[in-house]
Length: 238
Image (cartoon, rainbow, N blue to C red; front, top):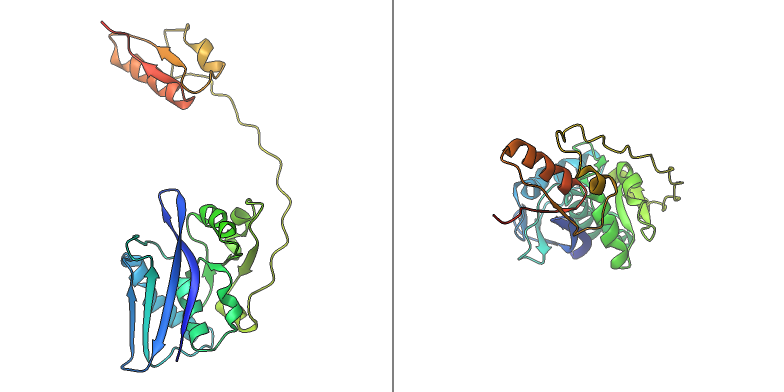
């Protein structure tokens, strides 16, 4: 019995924070414990990982399995830790080559061993190159991850592929041409044509667009239009 450390990440706001999934398999009464300030979805990974390993033809160790999500003070949430926990258990028990530990693993596991995408894959793809590591994620996450030029993605469809080590890196897909963004027609703005000029010209961030009226409906409407184009809304002093 041994240990394994799998690089991963978790979302804090819109950023992905580095996390290490430390797996220890030792002798003792059979148990599966996850520590490190994880939410309910993280704790439920025990059942998904156990079922996914058995469905993929692997053996779940009949021993004491302890998983630590470091750093502990950072709250972890979501199902993206299913894949790194499974990779850590397989590497610690010698069922897969240890080169699978050289990639940032993020993904949800199905009970049949399939790997699924999780929200925030773009943030995870941005964080992986900053650690000098590729990204191990589902095939569904390939489109979002390849928008990051520096990110090398190893797409994984199911856990069974890991028997031969990391899957081959995917070739970068050609970017689609940008779509035309329609200009709004300001139908929600009525009765006051004079402020439409600065709104349509899209003045720089921080520009003032001042309007005062006793009818709250019109004032709120202009406030929303200004906020759409990052114009600062001000109210004249009485």
